[in-house]
Amino acid sequence: MKKIKDYATNTTRYILESVEDVESEFAELSPMTHLTDYTSTYGYYLANTLPLIKEVLVSGLGLVVSIRIRCEDGYKPKIIISPFDGVKTVMGTCAYLYHKEDLDTPLASIGFNTTNERYVLRNKGIKRGGEQRDYWDASLKESKSLKNIMKVLRSTLSTVTPTPHAFLEVLLSKCEAYREKAMGAYHDGHSITAIPHSELERMVDLGYEPNDPILKSMVANYKDNYTSYAEAKKYAPTTYHVRRVSDSDSVYIAKFQYPSWEDTAGSRYSNSYSIRNYLASNPMGQEQLYSEDKIPEHISGTTAVLDMQDSTSELKLSDCHCYLQGVGIKVNGNRYWIIDENKEVELDV
Image (cartoon, rainbow, N blue to C red; front, top):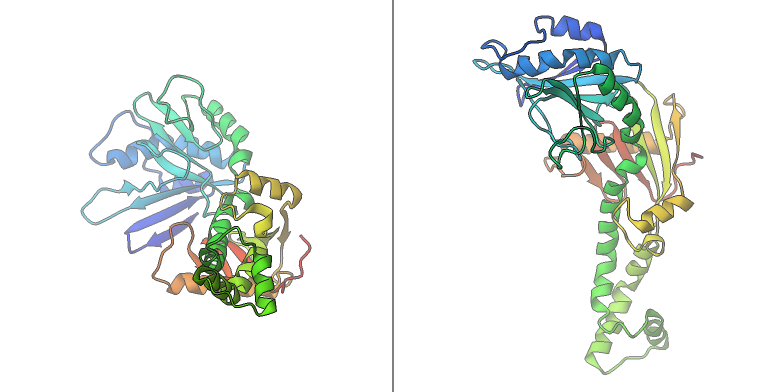
């Protein structure tokens, strides 16, 4: 078991890896039918979820259970529930499931519904079905049977286990913002769209100086900004998705040839038609490298730079830990995008 303390928020994150961890840490809790002054909601929900937690840990699915608890002087312990993208978080949720190799990306939440006394499983792979419930809660599976809950978990786990594609949107968002900025100056100054770039190029090559002020401004804009515009349209660096394996010196690396403007028209959405069509022709391969000796120096050096930037920066981005233009992105604690503009990495993935 791991205990990760956050002194700023007075919370402790418990990473339960075995049934023995559960029994040693939460031995005083046992399933109960009503709240008590001692346990309050903390003990009630957690105690009744313990049988499901144990089933998950002996399932052989390679999962661990994460529980975050706030314990302050003078107050009863409180379970802290964080937002979970794509899944509703409601009363009764008390723990999250992670793959043991990736402790930064939640796969599902579990808990106990006090209204009907059923175990609760939520993940994005669950589709609405079963007994009637609110339409917004389509990601919910409830059952009094642990067997039924585990059956649904097994059947949906492969659909919610994140691949590099799941984190592609943050790369698209940052790189396309850079491309848009680089193309913007010329685009905004190209006020007569009927005049093609090639015609402006001919005017410049021939030394023609127009008298019309609008056309004169366009020629000047071409001279000042067209080179940056053209280079930005062709911008297509090789990128690498890198995920460290928790408690290991190995990493998973996936290679992605970033699309030019002509390929996807600057789409920022990983599920857009243009991106899906591009990926069909340019799939991301992935390889696990077990030793630091095999990890390219540019990749290990860039992840170290991003780690340093993350630890020293006071600016917190909404979609990632940190971003350095032309260098890379730290998505979360163990996951990165490396931008290799100069093709320094020689890796056949």
